[in-house]
Image 1 (cartoon, rainbow, N blue to C red):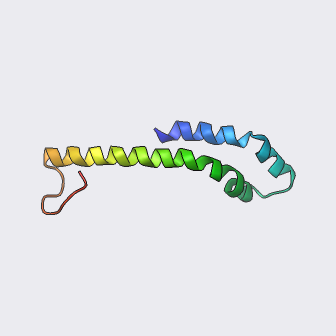
Image 2: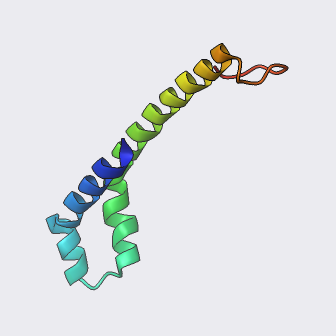
Image 3: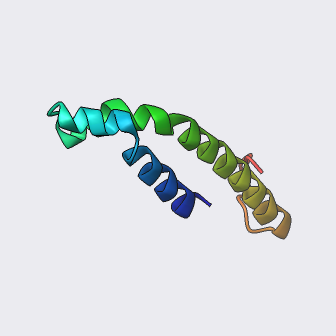
Length: 77
């Protein structure tokens, strides 16, 4: 899920005007990533984390149903 969409999102943000202005003003690449690109990627990354957490819960429940999960402790599934 996250690989291809994240790359497209990042490349889209790289070509925005405010990133070009930051480059022209002499900011270092790390500074541009932290101050310009990362805040705009936060909502996308938050969505990916939520979806992956839900998928991992379903996977844990599937393992428990098949008897492959932990037997002597409580599990998230």
